[in-house]
Image 1 (tube, rainbow, N blue to C red):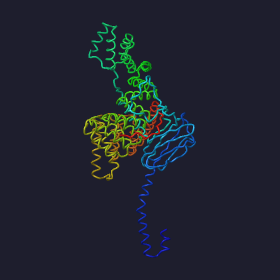
Image 2: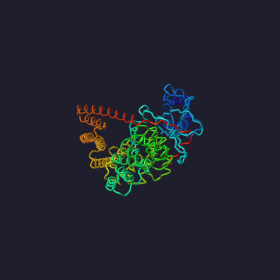
Image 3: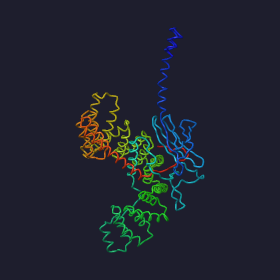
Length: 559
């Protein structure tokens, strides 16, 4: 084009005008390129009918929050869809097919270059005013839950059939956070009524003197439950039940003792018998715990929901949200934790659960914000910092807020091996993405600080395999392969299942010319990685995934 212009126009004035025009267009080009770069997200997934078969020819709609008209496309012969070239932002996603029903996700948050998988299961429309699937109340008393959930859990499916959303590291981190969130529960309100001040020894003596005393047998059983000796409590509570079959408190304690002792079938039978006459939140919650232990996850989540409807207390809301998150239902879990946070804004674990649900839903920045707020509520509580440390493993570059909180963690708890380790990793990741030259003095000082923190971590916990691994990575980066080899060996000794340590040790041996040792470690790596994948698959089979539908209403606003 420039040659053609020089051929047609020889005037200096015209040539100058062309140069000015070219310069103007050059100024416009970067924004155009930037706009194209911001439209590189992809949303994809599979639409299934109520029988989990691919919904071929279903219509899928995707509408950005700031757009008036949705994009549409039909599903292919596998029931799949894919929207390309999306801008980062919030979208509504829904699908429908005549005769199969519809499904909707009210809020899908997309990063500017993210690829996200969202699968939907079509559910037939229900008659107006119908309630979500749940346990039917045994009395006419309406729930006191402050509003109706915007989702319905309609089934369960095998997690391994649905694939992971994002990289393997992100998937593993989400699963780990979900399990650790569920571990924070387990403290239901009013589980066992307060026991009398009488000692166990005195009660045993009374039972021997008065074996027909209901109070003595009942009170001794309660003390044994609270001491974690449920097996011993059961005979006394059973004797009390024979003496007074209609006593609710004793019947509940007996059901609880059987649950604590692992007699889940008996605990379920006794709890269901009580529910036939008492529609109490504590009974629904106990039955939910038992159903989960028996592997009946769908029944469990419905009982957790009913308990929270009857008594929207912090423990019941937290356990409901944790159950949803554990079974890979982040959007419903997000709604429950958000409601719990509005009711109980000072609850650290509810904010942590909210952050874990946001992370599982793909909103990492908001997740860090919520868990950081949890750490501010009680700076001495290590739980929020440990969650932040877990989350940074899935981040290439930790945010300023995350690094600041992990720095506070090690400042408040300098004798915590995990505090030293997580702060070291955050500094290391920031160093690797720093614009400073690798040979700069500031970079050297940063590496020294990282090494000092990691050395302190393994000093505090000599079996901290992950800290040894990170030390090996640091020394390999510094080309000090002798130290790196020693670090990797100690990492493997502390955590033999750590496949990355075997792989990096093989690379370090290769750098030092020890080829046979490198080959041996690669074989160990392949075997360990295979076993790790098999173990992860078994765990995913054990935790079934909820099939849920979000209602056609505005998404719940996260506080």
